Image (cartoon, rainbow, N blue to C red; front, side):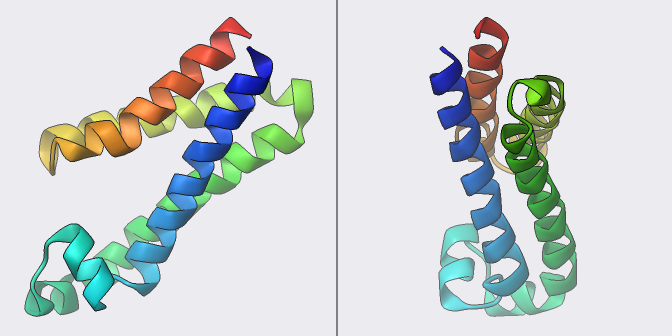
Length: 118
């Protein structure tokens, strides 16, 4: 179960590193606009806000990676960061788009449960 928890945590960390790239560097590019279904005007106007959001996603990815590097001593850190991701995903699913529940909250919730069970 520990291997599954670590694998799921790595997946969540990779997702958030990807969110960082999308929001900080690709937000106003065709790929970013297609993924987030935004117009060029909206993307241009919200670029700074998206970059800030991307930075926060990077911090989540870094915290999850750190929890893995810490080994067995990182379980508490992992639980904290996974819980942050779940809460952010729940809020995003409520306030932005229900797709956030599947893409962000669900993988983190699975990793959190696997961590608790390991």
